[in-house]
Length: 296
View (cartoon, helix red, strand yellow):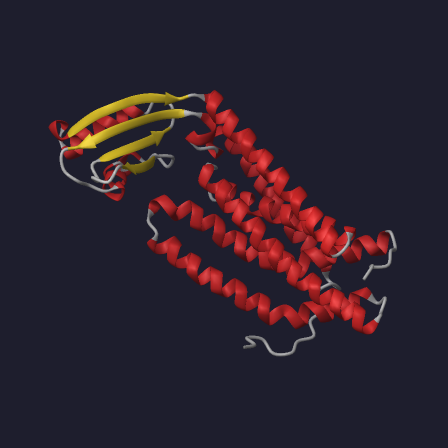
């Protein structure tokens, strides 16, 4: 199935404009991130309060979350514990658990709520989590570089790594601009996006290698443009498929999955964008500045 018939777009001739677009978004994200400071991070990273309660009758995390909506605390996380649907863990910013408990007692009734524990998530534990997340990213990017360098060649590996890093920066920029918080669910989303983006880039790189082998041409702009046009329908179909599924998760998955689905939505779109407009363009710009012949 071909969603887009034969095309002949000059994707690489205007690569400088796409560099500017990406750089503008990343810079705007960095500025927004810097201005928000600690507000960027959820309790997983900066610590906070953890309140565990038990209700007299079964409830749901959605009900608990809706009961707290009047507090306008965007960083409240509610998790159901056990199989009885009457125990919940509520994570929030420091010194907010008493406010949350008072609100729940007022809404549900003081006699209907039993406090099982009220503790503090230490910043030390959060720092450890942040460091582990950073290490996971570094290992992932290095693995991508090694894999593509072996399967294709070094220039392709470096380019794919840069493109993946570019995607993650843009996703984080959109998260910061939208006022979303960075927590452990975002780490999972970013790792998913990295895998998706790399896979999409590899498909185009594979077609580029095939076309260079067929033509033996060193006119790389022409070969790259042809390869991207040939895989455009596949790339579009792939991103549309995952975006439709993610939109369902975004609108119907509930508040707990809202930020996760938002990050994936931006990441899938940006992953397709970078595969088409950025990854191959970086190779061309590199080749123009420091001429090399692509090895087959």
